[in-house]
Amino acid sequence: MKLVSFRYFCVRSLAATTGVFSAAPMAAACPPEALGVARTLEVGTSGGLQVGLKTYPRTLALDEREIVLTFDDGPSAQTTPKVLDALAAECVKATFFLVGRNAEALPALVKREVAEGHTVAHHSFSHPAATLRNLSEKAAQEEILRGFEADDKAAYGTTENAPKVRFFRFPGFADTPELVAWLSAQNIGVFGADFWASDWVTMTPEAELALILSRLDKERRGILLLHDTKQQTAAMLPGLLQELKKRGYKIVALAPGTEPAPTRAAPEGWSSATEKIIADVFAKARRAAKPRGPAREGAEESGQGATLRPNNKYK
Image (cartoon, rainbow, N blue to C red; front, side, top):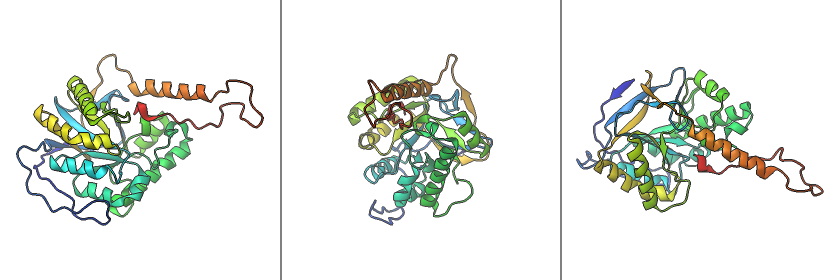
């Protein structure tokens, strides 16, 4: 692991190639009241890595009151610019786990993320409703690889044999041992989360902020999952960043590295929160797919072939 000191500079948008966002001039040094970034943690993924206590029994070894901000599912033309504006106003850097088809549709926003110093990571090509777990292994691998390609082309204009940033997050955290082993063989790190905003549930920005702060007061540090595709999160984010500053929390930015990052083990008695929720979601889906009475003519007589479409409450 390598720690990189981070000077508090705000870098705003360098250019706008479409009407998705407006060009902004290069900003001066960040004001002293800005939250900023305390340090940048370079994370090596050689041989694979799985972190995030909601899913895995290890996470990054962050200090007390250190937070990593991560955003899933973008970019979105409606909300990602607002999220980027809020981060820039506080000189904060985050990691964005992109959905490939969204990156493909909005490359200017992806380029803006890169230009403003954020880390662009990967979250599959289409975020399949069935999750990667319920695709064939070959189809799941193709979905992941297609996402790598779309994200890198949007971000950098070209693609290579491996993604530039080897960070991946499973949609719905629904991994499989085979896919994790396959990603590890390609030196891809898998990122879960230590706590989340639950912003897939509709609530006011004020309620979301209160929920995050209550969880943060309990966890005291960790990888936070949000979604830059949610209006309520975009509206809530400025208040969250101000509260983090007020409460003495520090932002840790993630970047690709060459050396393994130190990790800490889960506390005694740990179990995967996501596995419990995924099992419940798919059990309910299977029950819903079963016929409740005599099959009508022309109707399927079983739930076989039905696509499981759990909601995102387990993310």
